[in-house]
Length: 468
Image 1 (tube, rainbow, N blue to C red):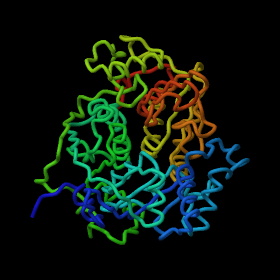
Image 2: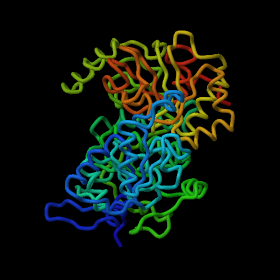
Image 3: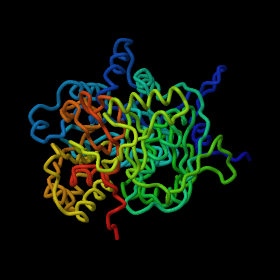
Image 4: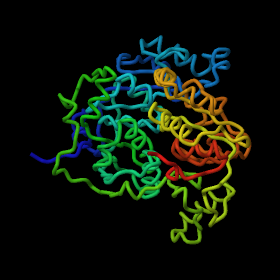
């Protein structure tokens, strides 16, 4: 019997047909939709006189456009794209979480919390960061609007097979470092397009010790290195996570009878491997306009002249010009205007507990020069749990705004935006130009680094805190 990677197992199990050109028609078990990429897909079906194949396999959650300010949320929503999502779902018998409902949240946070993602399944969503669900051993990918329509119509998509890239992480993370630092370090090592054409599989002892929420953060960021998929094999922590959430199986073509089968074989050969040492990773922060443009908080802004590749050098020069940074500037002590803690990368309960822990260790309140510091939980369920634990109170007493769930400042599609040329330390996943507002300057970092920036008014090293 040939040893297979987890990716190969899942791909083979969900293959409906292989065409002469080498592409595969792939079966989709679970489909998530939101208000931004679904209207066009429903419109296409309507124009062609077609219907949704099976509404039970699709879960809808409004998240991108919804306001996180409680008063604005109650006053004006749902409307626009969110209202259209609700009407489309009602027409096709698709489950849709109301904006004010207890199941609402960011689709890549609330979906796994509600047990809709399981090992050995296949997941699709019209959103780049669908790879998040791969932390649960699912073949999860972001798709375009036309493919959203295909999945609604036939629960399948046609695409090329990828190769397998093993990310091996060994050792123990230093105090003050977390999954976000691993993800940013990984992006800087692999590069913006280094994962293109690959499925990343996370392996090694350090990954095995990570809570499921942390694995989701790393899988979430794999797309920033160009990978379409990211996977983590099933183990006891994963099964415990699923059982605690009453996970259910919707899959009609389940490739594995038991979730523990969702692992690579011991002798499986990956196309490529990148080895990293967790104990050598320091708290990270981005200096440029893409996640791979990151380095240690204790480092300095790189000099583009030291970059040999002309294209990479040109991109670095443009990034420093946009970010108003000079080569050699220390990243620590860089002043900031705003702090955002949230997004599908770092809005889970574990992330926000870390933020509250930093507040408790450091003491003090949000610095007077910070225009705003907002904490946006990823789901109504997480928000309620954190409030019961007193985490919300710790943060609000320290001067942070405690918001309602949504994508918020991760992307400027709602009312949460930076002012012109403001600088923000953000726990989101992309630092592109104007991502958080007009000429906004975004520095991606972990929740710990973000809280430190909010309280001190500048970028600081989270590993310098007394974590014991």
